[in-house]
Image (cartoon, rainbow, N blue to C red; front, side, top):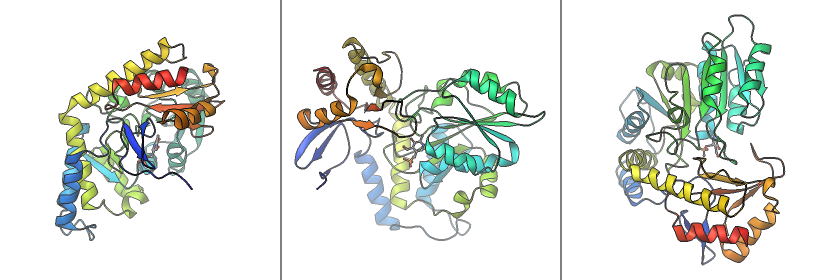
Length: 365
Ligand SMILES: Cc1ncc(COP(=O)(O)O)c(C=O)c1O
């Protein structure tokens, strides 16, 4: 029988009556059981029930309106769109942008959401080598005819390795083409990267016209569902072209209230992101000092031990779980898993130094 998770997911989890240090998933800011989010969800559920059904043209739904307002403030955009899962975001953007692009270029190791989402535009798709701006430039030269507008789609932070793509170099390559568009799936970067946590575009100072992002509330924000920060114009294109946009229900009131509260918390409490950055730096430096092939200065809270480390990664992950009560994840084949597999460690803002020290000691022992 599979072990049973007996409480919320955080830096420590309870499984079958025992505590485990937890480094899986994407709860980077430690918000999955934040009391203010839980209170907001309960209050909205008591007031509005589980489901706000009916046309939004008839009356506004306050929890949903609050969510869209908080998302727009957080991302500094005119408006935003909530979608049932972050998985749908890339597809909604591709659908919306099909009127203003001709050919799509994809990082060859993009997440499934990007790969599958790109097809919704119904345009030719070409792949460029993972995180390789030189190959992107080559693919653009090889596949674009005069006056064709490229749409580049990529993850803003890759889920298994934590790599951040070289977006400035991509933009330089795209600048040779009028009307070129860039779209990032910031599922793992939103709430984490950038001066105010807006994600990979903010991290590189690349926000602006022709740059699009989708995010999820189910990782750093500790809630659930996807977000597309956008202009009224993009919202109009989604309304026109995206069947997910047109055909999905709005979130339940409790979820919408928890999402809105989470966006507010992350905006008003920058110490959450500072603690995450400090823990990321600390763990990366400690793993590096212990002789592991980890970039000590990389800002990503996703740390992947790969085959360079000459460890049996699967056996190490299993040993940590069994003997040390430490949960990490081993991936053999998921989205951008490197050849030879990866042991993925996700750092949270509220892991303690004792936990991080225990992890390093357990990995190298
Ligand atoms: C890059 C990327 N996009 C989208 C998703 C899906 O987001 P959600 O958790 O909101 O379904 C994931 C999930 O892991 C992801 O890694």
